[in-house]
Image 1 (cartoon, one colour):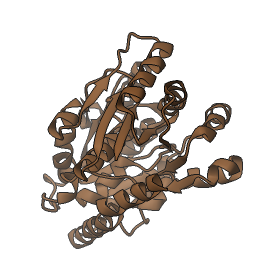
Image 2 (cartoon, helix red, strand yellow):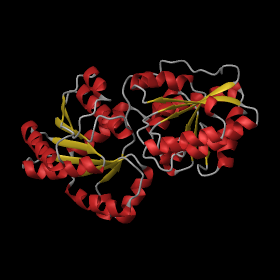
Image 3 (cartoon, helix red, strand yellow):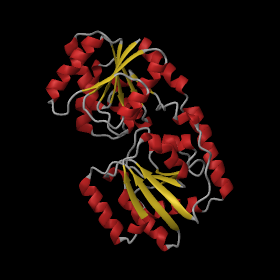
Image 4 (cartoon, helix red, strand yellow):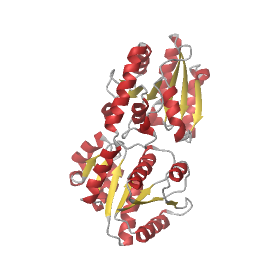
Length: 362
């Protein structure tokens, strides 16, 4: 089968990683695969080269109309059996470009976030009636489609995320010890308001006052300059600047080591799709404290394989941190093992491939 994957970008992000990993899976199964990016960013280009995935990037300097026209020309040139794309903007480009190209092929669109924006959703999803198949990795989005877009709901299928072969090898041993009881707390993701880092830092300041030692390592994109300034000012006011390190974006090949060395992953997002961070927590046998929202609760069972807290409450976050610190080594080891077992069950590549192929063949 010839499949054209249309990505919004190759920049760091969960949806970007997912569509490229899906392309790698289809290529490994003997399909003819090509990836077209609507922008020219290079974060995931090493992944494409390592997996020998052919691709092309459109220029950032070109306007939207030109990029849609160029996309239609690539569709006509490649003449695929199917087009797969993720997220609203790339999906809109794929809808219009397929119509312009005149190519008759299956169009599969995928919504990868639980964020609800009613006005924009109505505009975008009204156009999604041109799609043949719709998938989502968001359990809350399934209900949202059912209530608000019943005709699209008939085309909708829930498929969990997929992960590369290198992530599922589970090569690193489970680590328990800390450096002199100085806990290594880790955040991985965008440094942006929806991640609730301000409230988390207030809970960390309280943790420090209670006598617990820690270092909080933040890995991720810091392009939101105003939020970064606000966060650093608060950290200084709380007198915890010596306990916090900003690392910036991290290469994907380094993530397994970071997860393995972390004592606790902190993810207190306002909203998530199917979180890649939580999925990698399972894969690496790490422990997490996450916001108690439907997407996270789908992956994390409170006090079983992690901790769910109220991300708007300093008290709740602080109590989650104390619950983690109170675990014995044996309890931590058992929690890590449960995460690895759940990962092998949830992220079976063969099962995900069969689901996608079944939909495309229909």
